[in-house]
Amino acid sequence: MEHIAFPYVFLDATYCKVRINQRVVSQAAVIATGVSADGRREVLGCATGDSETEAFWAEFLRDLRDRGLDGVQLVMSDARRGLVNAIGTAFQGASWQRCRVHFMRNVLAKASKGNDEMVAATIRTILAQPGRKEVRAQVDLVANMLASQFPAVAEVLLEAKADLTSFADFPHAHWHKIWSTNPIERLNREVKRRTDVVGILPNPAALLRLSSCVLIEAQSSTRRVTPLPGTRPRAATAGSRRACRGLRRPSYRLCPGGRRRVPLRPSRHGVFALALPTSTGRVPSAMSARLRRLGPAQQRCTGAGSIGSGRCRR
Image 1 (tube, rainbow, N blue to C red):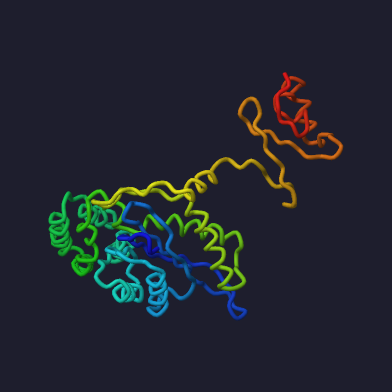
Image 2 (tube, rainbow, N blue to C red):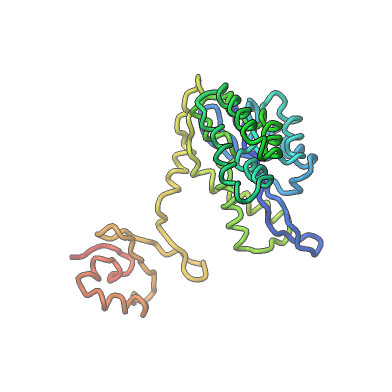
């Protein structure tokens, strides 16, 4: 990470079931992503532990700093007390943006159920303002509007004014990307989807390994955002080109049991036909039934009529 600065850093956690000391407990898998100065989004690190303690977050962020994370100007996260304190210690001089999605959930919990949609629509007008001064002025206006009927909501809104509007100090083109932790939520859902398949992981180390593999896979499909003013986009490297080639359609699939690779060969019509490697050259019964339905001419075009060739002989 020493090669470039990361002005924007996102922090979040997702919870999975892990077995510790013969007990099944909920363990947090925390993820850190960043947007570099040239607009490239990258995964910075991950760890497992107790996400509610300041000591855990301080150790995690300190490790990122030791690995070369620098130039941080804004950190996006929810309002976990331990996390917020650790951010203030590890990234001194950087602003903290409270995630607007998590904030909205906390605010609506203080409003009556029948009026939550009205309160949410009123608060969203803060984010619709065109400039920094207008955004902060709208916070005061909304708080005054809600104070008579929802005093608890108005109090929370005024207390969070500075942290909720930190995004307004940055370029307007970046606002919709940095006022919440939504860019990292997709990674959380992917980690959760993979761990749900396993169910209960045997130990925290297994959760860390699985999460790391998911993040490494996701790193190859990240998107570029608008670069910061005064920076130039980074040229494509050999590694990035290899990553793009890795996103193409696979040329093989695994046989039942996962021991052999079966090549997929393109047919005349652009459809990948299965070329079965058999010693006798005979087509298995399942494919034989399909070929009988297709007819001789179509058999030759699919490539299945000639084992291993995958070419049309018409």
